[in-house]
Image (cartoon, rainbow, N blue to C red; front, side, top):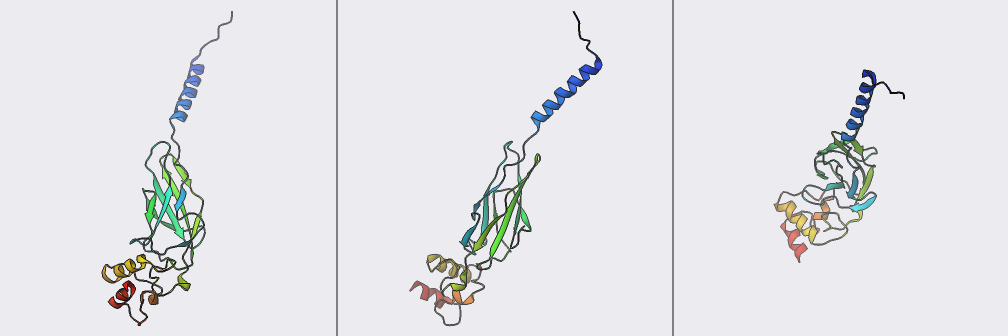
Length: 188
């Protein structure tokens, strides 16, 4: 009977292989690939101002290991979009970036954790084209409703965003000024 010789070299090799397998098993996974939830990819007629912050982007994300993720947000009017900011949430407000009527915006999310980085596809959305809007459609969103009145009151008395670039949209009674008489006319 032949007995294999166990040498220091063979024990070292087995130990190294075992350590490599354990290290591979302990290595974490990178974050899930982010997916757009709002605005949906290719969405049109997105309001210029969704809320007081001027809008927001929402996406799904997460990490299979439960690691903390830093999301890098890219946003702009060209593709690929420019760096916009970072967020630890799957939502970020759009602030300080003018959203003009009928303009297409591109956005992308890069998710980063200690185990790696993943990136979403490049998504796009087009804002509501207010060039055909009528006086009273203060928030440029497809017609006149109570949200326009709230927008106008917030602009005049609460420091909210002005109805730009169409000043005339806030001039509901068409008298050449934006004042309390526009709110009264709107309510009537």
